[in-house]
Image 1 (cartoon, one colour):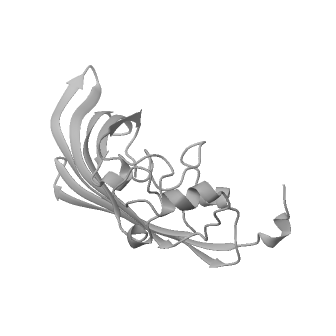
Image 2 (spheres, rainbow, N blue to C red):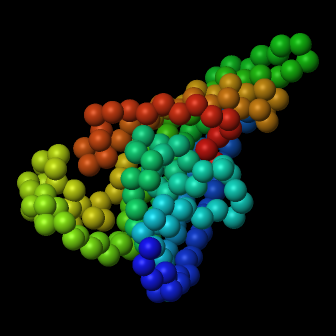
Length: 198
């Protein structure tokens, strides 16, 4: 398994969430800004998929990319020692109605998500065939190692449909797609879950 004693790191994690009501019970502007940085030491590569949280939101940890961070981009797409991300969305309550004694609303939330590497992970390439791929044309699907794109932002956009009961129980269906071919923009993703992402 190798010498694990060299792995001893300290990470800094910060997240800011803000909800700004624009039209009461109809329109809210919501955004989230976050970062996770390696302050000291080094961690194993596989631990860079963990985006630390103050509280556990879900059983499965994940890094940047996927239903809980950057919708429309493949899960754990952005692996690095340090990352930054942002989510921006408008939460529009389109229709309110009652069924029995329960209050319901149907909402839409157009959104845009972004993330980027701020501290790259030191890559060690040992297979000589990978060097050939690294020198390939950056537009080629085989090119995975392009330092000129290392700090480029990963962007996605989409829209969500929400069905809420009594404001607390929210069924969420989000559709999103990446905006850049480096994140496989030919495909889109559909996420079905409970609650808003943040």
